[in-house]
Image (cartoon, rainbow, N blue to C red):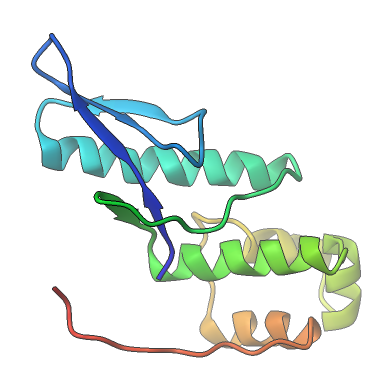
Length: 139
């Protein structure tokens, strides 16, 4: 699970302002708490995608009183991106290791693109890593 702590503040317009301490560029709002959380998830995804496109650091997951959980596939892609940066493996190098074309690696790291689990396993394998899956009862 990949989560980001958010700060939810009721403002004078009777809306909820959302900020994300780990991603200072994220600011959004909603008329209700649930709407603000939905918008926060979208805003976090956009901020992370922008950081990945700009080859910038993506912060590790954070915990707090209120959190937004990223979709499982987005979390896997973020972890793959972070692993590539830690190992100094470029998209071109990953494509070479996988014997794939560069656009395939671009799609692999695109948070909005659906990627098959076996492709993610191959990518992590090319970094000498593996995926572990844990299932738990929803709260």
